[in-house]
Length: 112
Ligand code: AMP
Ligand code: ZN
Image (spheres, rainbow, N blue to C red):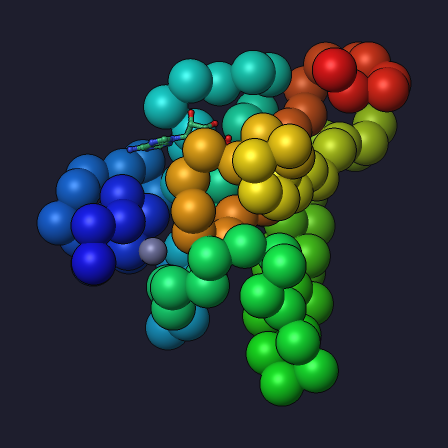
């Protein structure tokens, strides 16, 4: 399957890893929108948040735990933002489930 995040998970494409375990990976975004901008993915290919069901919802629970752990390590003690873009209108460009962890500056709301 031609998926850039699967390739990153398989080490076919290089990334700046910040966290890895058997099932998940986190790496720096290529085009950072904040001083800290990390992407958190399951290694398993799940297309989007729209594919989360009762059977696989443990994936997103773990992704939140990993985000909080990285935020702590990066010193984001004043807060941070976790974003999931889902589908065309949500602005999803990579069709492999991911959370954006953004921090190190004050975020704007509502997001554009
Ligand atoms: P989204 O628009 O929510 O699908 O987010 C996709 C994100 O992946 C964007 O922020 C891109 O900058 C980022 N991205 C795309 N390719 C790579 C890559 N090879 N390594 C790191 N980040 C990437
Ligand atoms: Zn994938």
